[in-house]
Amino acid sequence: DGEGLPLRKLLRLPLMWMMILLMICSGASETTMAQWASAFTESALGVSKTIGDLAGPCLFAFFMGISRMLYGKLSEKLNLAKTMLMSGLLCMACYLLASLAPMPVLGLAGCALCGFSVGIMWPGTISLSSQKCPKGGTAMFAFLALAGDLGGTVSPAMVGSLSEMAGGNLKIGLLTATVFPILLVAGLLVLNRRIRCSTNHKAIVSTFAVCHEGRNDSV
Image 1 (spheres, rainbow, N blue to C red):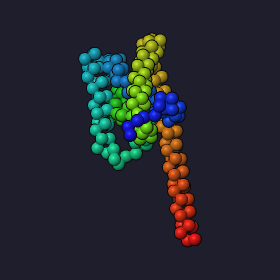
Image 2 (cartoon, rainbow, N blue to C red):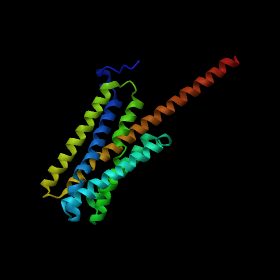
Image 3 (cartoon, rainbow, N blue to C red):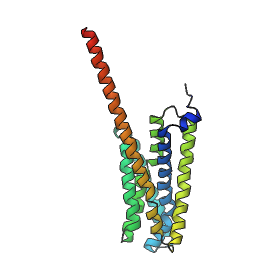
Image 4 (cartoon, helix red, strand yellow):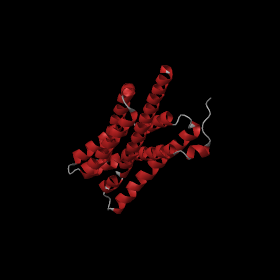
């Protein structure tokens, strides 16, 4: 019928708040590295701003494009929640590599591969929300968009402030921003567990119904 849940009922759903958390972390994980990739490349490799703009953001965008293209072709064969979980783990590794790697080239590799890891996070969260809460309606997508923008605004600003407090050390800021992919992974683990429990419950109910029908037929 196309009608969504009333706003009060929507905001009372624990699943809705879980999706909002995933969206905040998705937006933060993506935009933080995207916005600071150029400055990170300049400071880590000691190159000019022109080279930094080309090597950092371009590599990030290139790998993010590859990620979305691959998922677009393989989406029917992959479990979205599990794929996002693997992407979240890769994103954690990339942030840690970029902020802790002793060699600048490894840091740049972490920055570039981060684009691959965050490629499906934002659209994947939207898809998961529509699957698990089909009655969410327009209000749900509005809240998710707001949550993504919130994460994409707060996290880069936080990285900049912390890096400035650390004497211009951008690696300190990026290391702190690792909290967002960590929260994303934690949220996806909880979500996957709930999905698995729900699937098992439905299977038990279905089996019980079949057995009950069999007894009635035998009587």
